[in-house]
Image 1 (cartoon, rainbow, N blue to C red):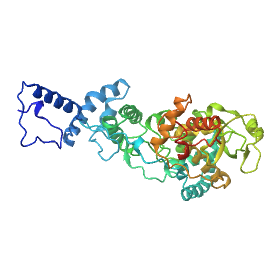
Image 2: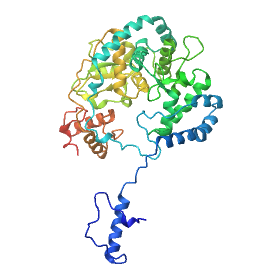
Image 3: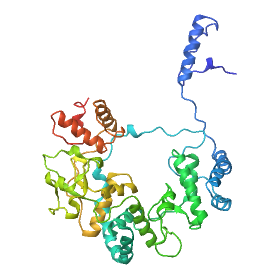
Image 4: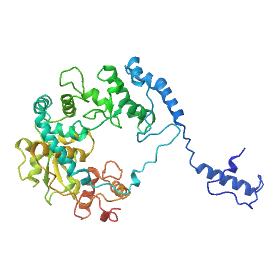
Length: 439
């Protein structure tokens, strides 16, 4: 049997002519101590189990761990048994961490660079969605009118979300939701979140809206034409065609109304736009960005901010609140957005997603095109460099939000405020020229 003293780091075999010192000698004790330190520093081995073993553990987990929680949450034994009859793990899903293995090391900070915001807006894709959206606006005009009357959300916004999420219901979303959610609840990097969604999916089955076989979703568990997670389905899905079932898989009225209901319950303000592309004059600092720095739109206008269309802000908007948004600082399109912009972000927490929906909705409703402002040559810095800049700003007392190597609005405006204080022209966006200056 080998002892710890015989273990050596890989790539360092014992010298063939080396003579082992006596165990009780000073040299022997010193070498043993060194070897012990080396062994302690080695990473623990990863014991990959066979898929058969993991499948066996999964079945035991369903019965001994998940079923008691589901039962306590009110799921019937009949629904539970039906949901998991013949089910096995889906090994093709991403971000899996089987028992006995370790999650992959987070590579976020070592990525070479983050993409320019402009890369998100594929003109070809937007034009195609807009053309389809205008056609479908006519096809479903009566339903969209009823949806807007019921929930106060404009038809073009609902259509834009529908188009972005599932290609107006045409996208193939084939994965069995129970299988996906159970796999991820058992062995993913976000077990707790998927466990909650799995319990919610069981409630959907128990409620009779869908059988387990009918419950189809994406590889991430989002379901149907609106791409609702199960918890969102339970809260926001509605039966709008009157057949007694909330069918976001096959019913266009149910899908459209469910999207509108989601946005309405998240705080959509009826009668208001999502926002406006604007030109911000040189004398107005880009460091005024963010939802927490809202002003009446009339004040932004008085400061010289104008819509790129040349049209004045509507009277109904003048006294209402608006927020500056500069996703690429002074290197890209500039906006004054309304609280409805942040409601759209509730659907997908991304400024670019909300801008995409707003732009697509405007194309559908008004035949407009891409944003007027060009996206500059940004998005090529190392994330580690942006992270260093964020840390430097925090050290100087600035609030950058999440220190993650990505330039969110708090990072952008803090950078702009620091630039102004340092006697630089504020750009509100990280670039290579600032790396040596911001230390």
